[in-house]
Length: 332
Image (cartoon, rainbow, N blue to C red; front, side):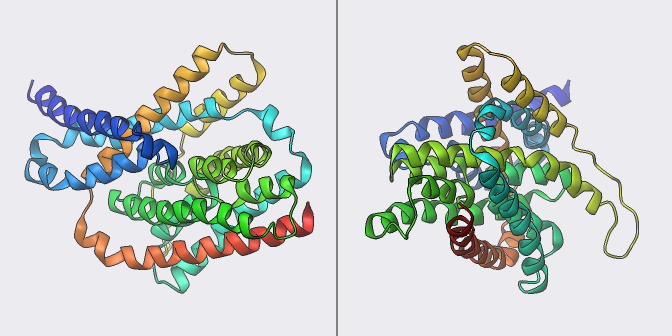
């Protein structure tokens, strides 16, 4: 009976933050600048973290459930946003650029993070994964896959979000000054291959032209789809510690669920209401997970590692911006 009571307390707290996040995200200002409710959820969670700390003994069960179990279900339902038809429409060059960006940023980010910024491997990977694939959603999925501590996910989300938003505003400004020798198709690939969040891609693409937005979203979906192999490979790399001692191998089964939903969404002509319901449910569950992660933030650990993580995210944003431009200019 006590378990039910403590679970209800904490679950209610997460629900309150989630509904507040979705409400704030519906404001005209937030919609205009494509501010994701996931970001609002983690910010509100952090603001309420002291309340959670003071009553953690009676609020832990539901928060942990939201941060872990509901997160995985949210990632599975995220598959309703991806269709293989759209992926096939951009051709081989767009697909190869997307793969190059994801693999390159993951490898470079992990190396730079651990060797230059002296971050631990998990945090370097989370920042790199968020930059390489799909922002906060990728960080959440990777955090669940490698079983890292919650504060690392919060740091990674914060660093990725900042530079994703800055890039979203920067790209249309650059386009207004100079097209940089790129046509609309190239600009679409460039935006989709280098911006962090899906919302960033929509925001930047729509600020340039409808054609750029359309192509950019398709390219971005290829990067999202690459989350599946990344989630399957990364746990294998973390199966042994740096000292060589074995640790438990966590196979992210929810990655197969995500793949299954993508395939169903691609093969069958699903009714629009079902796709919309899946997308809404995914957003709601991911906001719950982000809110729960925000509640679990450890400010001391955040301050100790946050600056270095932001430094890594800044370097990766520059690599995406300039390296991605070079790839598009030469290959499209």
